Image (cartoon, rainbow, N blue to C red; front, top):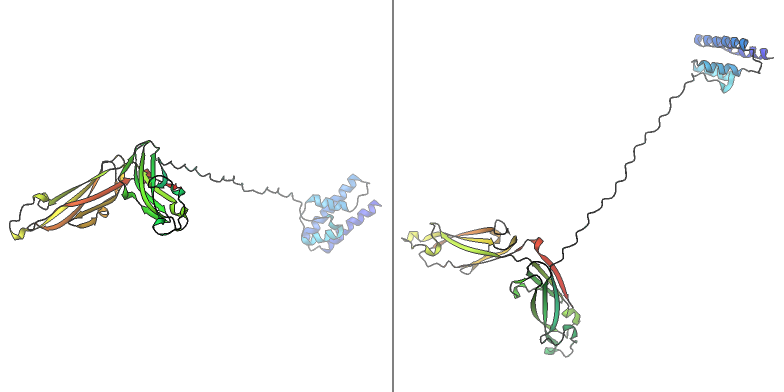
Length: 345
């Protein structure tokens, strides 16, 4: 029974090969495989029920290459057991290249903000009656109107230097009832030694019959202090001939009456700290002029000086007055200044 089955299996591909004999390569290849299978069968004399599938496995092992037409034929005979394409070991699939994940960038840590430098000067604000018998918060609202509504009180501003260096009061502004007033010019230049105090008084009339009293006496005192800085200014006057203005000789003839003279104003920082000039004016024969815009630079280091010149024409045949007044002021650099605010009550 096995031999009969084997002949059928072999006869079919030979007949098929004859039908496609136009493909010489195919016929030769099939005959070669059939002969090889026959030899193998005769040698092995296997009795284990081998079937036509052995042919498919043999052809697979042969690894031959056939056309698409051949493949259709053999698959029709042997089913899906046979693939006429060479059996190739696929190349190993490369592992996908994974882009490295960058390490997380930590959020920048802001530098710690330096604590503000404590102002070396503190201020206390108080308000009392002129005779000192009661404080402003003791005042009761008036109802009678007229002169009895006006009460005179005195505000006191006490500055205390809690630092290690001398401090000067450069500005003092008072805000009361929504109105701000600069009272710096009402008191002289005031320097405060370390551990010392300075007192500034302000007399004020309050109307106790109008509005809320707290809005009347509530006071805000803003001030600026810094190290003392001192400046001096000198004035020189010289004619075009090099004569000092107070020693200009009389003209020899009317043609020599007109003469150019030059004023030189020299500002020197005689203080202990670098400073900035904030005011520079002159007055001559009733004429006022602001000179600060003529300065090459308003910054003035310790012991440095700067100057401004003015040239004008005079008639020396007419009596002249060369009297000139100048006003100059400077303050320390801004980083040396301290600003603070005090309140009452």
